[in-house]
Image (cartoon, rainbow, N blue to C red; front, side, top):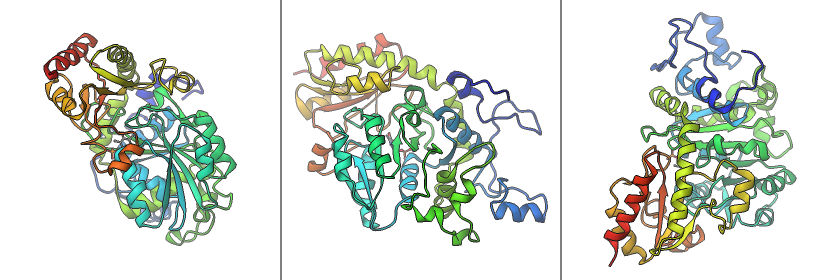
Length: 434
Ligand SMILES: *Cc1c(COP(=O)(O)O)cnc(C)c1O
């Protein structure tokens, strides 16, 4: 390929794929196979020793998944990526890749419910302590860091509070402390925000959401920014001989791979955590996620425009107490949204309905087009009640900490006609009244 820097709409269709050499198939073939026949003994040994990037066994690598990995790396502006069986696996592996028992992570407190639980409960049981901070002030991250902190973790658009962090300020805090900034970019996608352009070092995705875009498959991705110095002394696993691989040193082996660059983070995650813990993505799901990814920008353009309209409609509605969407001028994240997400702050909003929890339940049951379910990023519009569903595993205190309120309803806006969506909301307000 020539050196032309192709645009996003072009890359989402073409990046990472060369037509199948055997058949010329234009669509990415589904390589539905557990393992791959070795050419001969020498190449088998080279692949086993990771001297060659050839495929061996689909837990660790597969050609369909490989296209998805290359495509998301191109769209994010990263050096490489790792496809996984879920977004939760992507977050967990990204943290495990750089922490040991006795070390710490500092994270924003407004997180996806599953990530909140990972940080609040599961990681501490394995000795990794997490401090959850109010991300509105970047100083809070700095104040929570100790000499044992190994990462800062935030979401591009917080959940369910729909808040935005000052990424450059937080990236500076991470850099000053010699630790990576990991950003969960699920809600924004690289179409709306590219974290590496603002100093992030690792990106994780739940591909289940906007990347797949059709609510068909669970999948996750880790993307390597290739821009972090893992040899700074805080990450000895990267710079000392790895007994699991004949004593090679990850930092030496992957920091300048021809055609890719520094892919140290994702290679180590692949060779330790995907190989040993095994949350691999099925090639069939990789195919469905690729199919969705081809139209990512088209869907989001429509969805973001509709979300802005709906946010404005709700903000002036008598039955609504408050609306949280950074596209509204009075939102606390409005200025940050304009700076970092000029194409719009996503297609998810939350609002408080007058009448509290009971009214919220009636309202949700009265909707006809919006599907009541626990997901976001589908082409169909979705509704959920965070306090009783997505964030229900949090204690009352944790819910308050994470910004989850009883009257709160979260909407994920799809590609339906905007007039139909506004109609559905209005008829549900009427039917749930009184
Ligand atoms: C859904 C989601 C996850 C978890 O991803 P799964 O694919 O459901 O495992 C993580 N982060 C965010 C922001 C999400 O929305």
